[in-house]
Image (cartoon, rainbow, N blue to C red; front, side, top):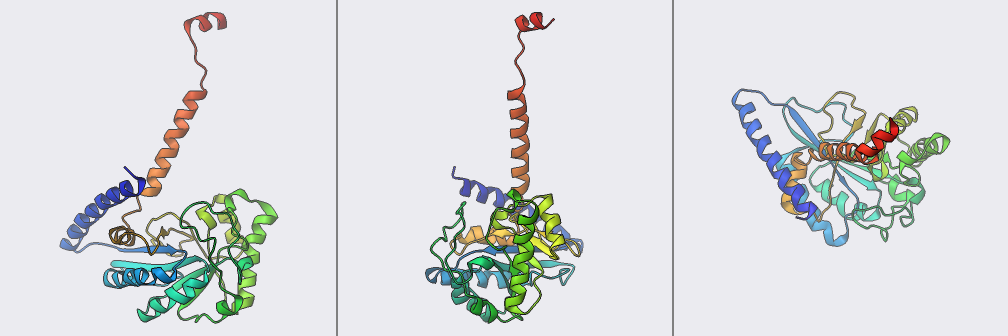
Length: 287
């Protein structure tokens, strides 16, 4: 069974369980607020209508919020935030007008050294955007602050978990300073390129002055006040309609736990394989 279909089926089961729990919570006057942050990259000209249909479903089933909220504006209900990584020009052309029509705020995470050119970072999976052009500094400066929040996606889009020391700090602090110089407004959030991070990267982000950073783990976001590391669900206009609806509902949040379990099992199996095989004959020689 293809991985995508398997993930969809498991997420359908999660959604069904959520539906049962939600019904019980409403029956007894309980429940809690939940929020999913969607992470897009490119929205091409041919994908604009697909994206618009997704946003129609979003405003039908969730309440749009900014990605910089300290706490969700309500104790119950489902919320959603829309973000874009890389800062591609086609997002300005195709996505932002559709969001404005529906009064949906958004956040763009920008690779500062790519502004005005084509992406130059390594392709490590997902939609291939190597031929997409990144917006210019002028386009970035013209974004309406009441509609679009600007965040950092580093200077050069490296895998941060492979970096340390001064090089790591430059990618984080350098991009924030440059974005603030271009836009004239504070830049307080960052999304990890390729979703890669570790404890050292998180600590360096705090040191660089960020107040929130975003991973690629599709878990509920903004569950706690002043949450520093928030999850996001990787999304594309070409997602199947049922796939998008499940992501928006938070039904893919089981994936990080599955990855963690898989890694632990692999570590146990590798540990066993490295363990020397001792036969009766070798036992006698050791004795």
